[in-house]
Image (cartoon, rainbow, N blue to C red; front, side, top):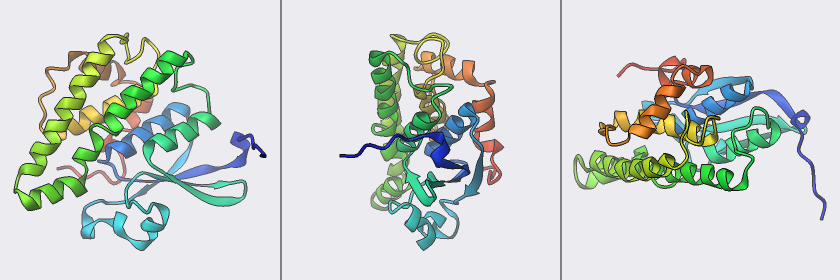
Length: 229
């Protein structure tokens, strides 16, 4: 078996990020790119207009799941695309390890991934447009309640976990991938009208990150496709 060693030099910059300002998954990737100082081209994909631009044949070719984000780039001379925020961020971490988003300690690295998956697997699928619209079609108004319910479950689990590890941020005093996921999720929870007062540790982490340039520049209202609602 031949193993290949990936190097940042194999990647041709800038990158092209297909995303939507309001997508929390896109928000995560924008934070990671800004945190690592990686230049990229912002390409908006409107998830609602015209039935959803993510359903176009062009975007389907980028991501058969018809979701955002999708990161397009030239890799060793060939056009490549990676979809799904976790995969994209881990790819960036491997190629651009400084500044790191994953703790060096194996336990805390695993804990950071656990916090990520509480959001990515435990909350995110229940608040996406497709399931909430399908639920609303069955019971009008139930889609929002479904999203609220799973936000509360996931945020409570996050709150309990980060109490064990929080300093200024989710894991001590260094920014990690857990913070990259927590901040966009709190933004989404507000959009779904979830009361965040039961999660003081998460709110404190968010407040400590509010003025960080990477987090501030990635905010939905800072994006070129932002639409006030």
